[in-house]
Length: 159
Image (cartoon, rainbow, N blue to C red; front, side, top):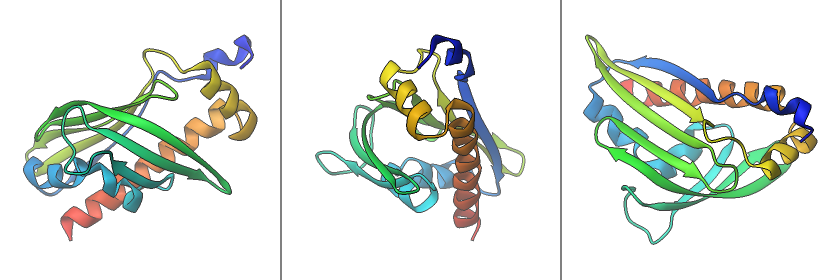
């Protein structure tokens, strides 16, 4: 990526939704990371390596999609605090994705976040600029995907 475009990479992207259910109920969904493929417009498949349930230190293999383009990523669960937060770090680009749950008077506030406070890998930045329409376009798509993911989770939990 041209160094003049580096300023376009946002340190954080996030979306929040209120769910009419207690954190323990919402946690059962958001901590089941292989189910991301049901909710996210970009995730095609997430597999817990070694099998079993997701826990702190779990490794996942993921397949993502944008249009006709597919790509694999590997991630590690770096924070797992039931029923408050699950976070996983993507090896290929250095991003950390998370779901954070906060109890409210009527249920749970769920925040879905992508954090790049450690920076985006050079290869990921270059590939995004070349194949994903550039940083601004791709980040806007990621944020819209977060909204869609949270809406689907909310609908499922509340049904």
